[in-house]
Image (cartoon, rainbow over all chains, first blue to last red; front, top):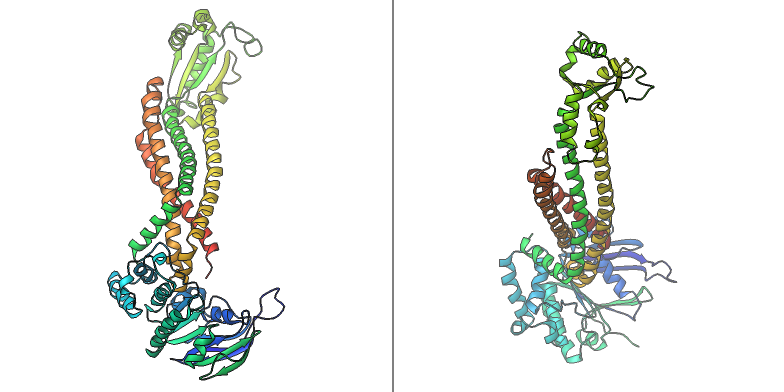
Length: 228
Length: 304
């Protein structure tokens, strides 16, 4: 599903590479926590899987696409199979919850009929059917992240990338988001989640990949956040 | 592909960026007005050429008592000169080129002069003897004037042979220079319009970078992301072009047809039909330049 092989990413002017000879295999339906201090290379790795950036050397295959060789014009179609959630939600402030979700379908040319069915469905799934017509400013942080999550999964992606999705949320709210991610994972969606949230990683006991200074220092099934 | 979505996005972009869009419209409007003016001038030259070249003749001026000594040493041309010229014009060599010709004596020339310069002070001082007796020659093909000019220049008693088209050519070259000036100004202005459009579109893209970021993440095609911006530029360019077209129509209707035609009744002027013919070109040019400027600017801003 995601196959990263001997990837090195060096940014010009940086003293050491952001990723140093990293190899990871992730299978369909897995839930993987990506942990490590700031600057350990988590974000760089996520960006490569999204094909927002290219490795300096090595190869990345995602959903059967060779991301190093894929021509630019095929990138949008590739990204339609991926959902992404960020720490800062990235909602459009002038659109309601439902409009935010609908926007992501409109821009890939889905029909009005499809959108009018899919949006209420996914808002119900994340528990926000009551708040469909609220603006992001009227929603709590947890609710905003649910909208972002709804937007990421409305097109039924095979892979969900989460970049510190609970980073801005209190523990109880984070818990709710994690429950939701777990449910999404159970329907067969592969989840790769970068996080700093020790409590969550320790509680859910999933596969944990730890990066340090651009190298993989740990890759264990059913592990915790690790010692500090 | 949903057109309604693209147009809604474009509408939002235009409303947010209204002052820049208005400046784009104005610059396009003014520059395309210059383009249109140049076009009208060219059409005017064309219609004057067909009208006047048809009427223009070759004039063979005979010497008068007041002609300069070096060309007319024997003074007033004798009736022998008249006969020689008449004979030559009727000869087998020249006849095939000539449509018709007639002779204008002192009295007839004076009469024409008085009507043409009616009210002008010079009309009072001129005497019939000062005006050249003239053979007016109308050629079958006005381009063959040099044949007549060569046959009669240097003939004793002939002061000058003149192709009237040379006077017209001066007017035309003046009009040509004017239209060239209009085109130069238009080119400069269109260049600045293109720069303004590309800045405006980039500004618009920066203002909407959140939307663009999300569109890229969820996998919207580049075409879909770029189209609202390109259309934004094209709409501004086309609105400017339509305003320019309106200005050109107004000038032709109120100034040329409403004023010039009455002031200069014997000249053929461009009409509304000519102006309407320019409209599609102006709109096409405005839309094309705006589209290219917007597309190249947004393409540089939005790499995958």
